[in-house]
Image (cartoon, rainbow, N blue to C red; front, side, top):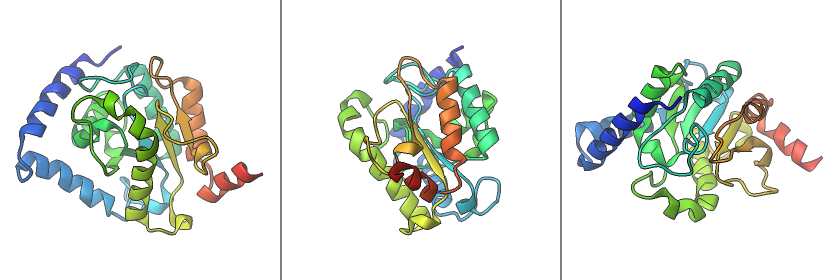
Length: 220
């Protein structure tokens, strides 16, 4: 079932937040929280952040069945699959979606729908969803992976051996074929969203022992 309340409130929240000036309480609260968590050495549960897997999460085409939308819509069955992946893997969530400017609202909505809203610990850098995301579709094939790398380096440093295990889920081909992160990427189909099989693949990627294990699988 579609979370209709989320869609309506999401549209209202989007309009209000983008009208607020940069130094307003609303914008400061969202950006301030993102910055503090981005620099944190602890996970959402208080463990060392390097020991906790990270899931870089897209929304449209993953937790719903649309390539793009004018407001935030989440579907319960897909959120339930996300909840199960997070529960089993213990992963925290970093928003890589165009909707990442609404970090606190998305976390709240996850909680309302039975998922772990407290696991949303931050968002990737870069321009969020402002107008028509279709115009960004070509660029996202190269920019999103750079944004993820920038987040990891900014939070954990340039030495990748010190990074936590991570996985990426998106309906766009944001990790190219043959890339070293290929086995950390699960691509959904925008008109289907996250399936049981894809959720299982995501869980497998999040529970590998280390990034080096993934690299060994690619080279063997």
